[in-house]
Image (cartoon, rainbow, N blue to C red; front, side):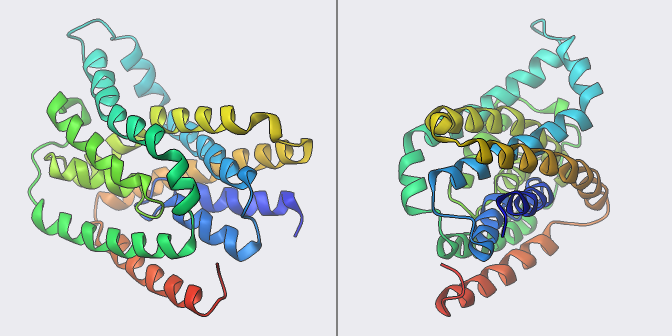
Length: 269
């Protein structure tokens, strides 16, 4: 299969799954196994960089709200408090990610570990729905530093491929008292510094080794993930106004079981 076609497929997978609580990294690993797009440092970097395309879709989707908040950055103003909360939530996983990055890339990027994380995350989501079923916060502007820190600590779970950054932060938001929709929105905004940092870190490590053909693949995957994610964000928020997360939890469990079967039968590595 041509490299650019693989990039398109991976971009679609990323755009569809980045903001759903089903693990974009896990699905990228699985898709990479199925189409033979895996195994080199470039493939790992590609998976991280195209996530930036999906993140920019959030920036575009919330462009008016972001612009408004950036005009209110004086201490005490709503925008200042909002971005301070985002930074507080960002730091725990940023620190843990830098410390554990090499170990994670060497030992945890496999279909087997993703399958286990998908199943475990599915049961955790069901537990979160049952335990944190009463919400008091429906607007991310009502977050405080303590609640933001809870979300940030929860985001550390997403360092394990297959757990899902979105699922981890949404569950953290629910534990902090947010509604599912508010937790999802906070997760979207938190993705901006998180994935910008991850992308920059990955590019600094592998920039010099990228060939011209691989740069083309990166560009194609980036654009495709942006366009697909832009549609996915809108549909996901609309879904959460009427439904819970349990359908995604059940999907994770079923997908994880199927993946374990594929691993043990040798169809994926």
